[in-house]
Amino acid sequence: MSRLSPAARKALLTLHLVTSLGWLGADLVLLMLGVAGLRGADPEVVYPAAGLVVTYLFAPLSVVVWLVGVVSALLTPWGLLRWRWVLVKFALTTVMLGLVLLLLTPTVRGLGELGAAVTIRDRLDLVIPPAVSSTLLLVATVLSTYKPWGRLRAAAPARRHPVAAARRS
Ligand code: HEM
Image 1 (cartoon, rainbow, N blue to C red):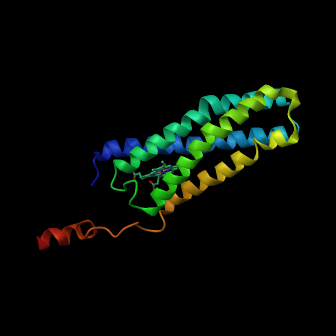
Image 2 (cartoon, rainbow, N blue to C red; image 1 turned 30 degrees about the vertical axis):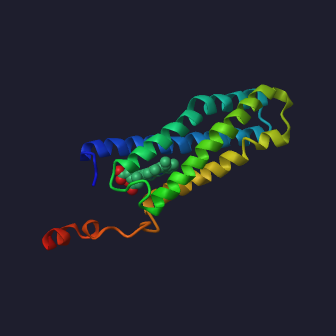
Image 3 (cartoon, protein in one colour; image 1 turned 135 degrees about the horizontal axis):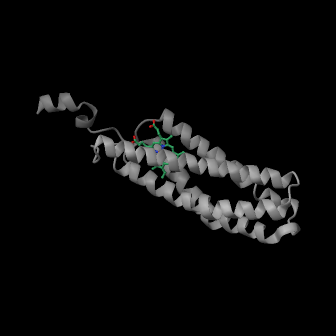
């Protein structure tokens, strides 16, 4: 049963879409900056810019997306641990949140401080992780719209056929 009015649920879904797809957009911006850096753009411009995007947009959005996603699951009939597509998205977002906060953010800030001294290997640090994470977020988006794989456990009869269950009682 949903604990939200239809209007509140729409507002929450709107927030979920804006934040999660905004997250994907910010990730693609990072990837583009990384590709620009790899193609020889001025590292003293590209990496400090990437540092700003990570610090003020991407990392905070990671936390917001996780929180709004979890709230969207808990306050709607989907639940957090009921449907495989929700559970996989939850796992994926949780892993990404950890990687963004513990690995990507310090790495990108470090690149900004290196300036002209960045090597090709350093430059790849702003290409491979955003390429992988953008792909994962695209997967999360497709899972959300197609909602594959069904439920984790069979629904209680009253949930599956609420009208028939009411008649039987
Ligand atoms: C903690 C992680 C997440 C959880 C638990 C979660 C859960 C949910 C739930 C329960 C809904 C249905 C909301 C409703 O019907 O009112 C939903 C919708 C949606 N989510 Fe997520 N989500 C998470 C992360 C993401 C991410 C990372 C993306 C994409 C980058 C995403 C994209 C979407 C989209 C596009 C919909 C709309 C699907 C539709 O209305 O048909 N979600 N999500």
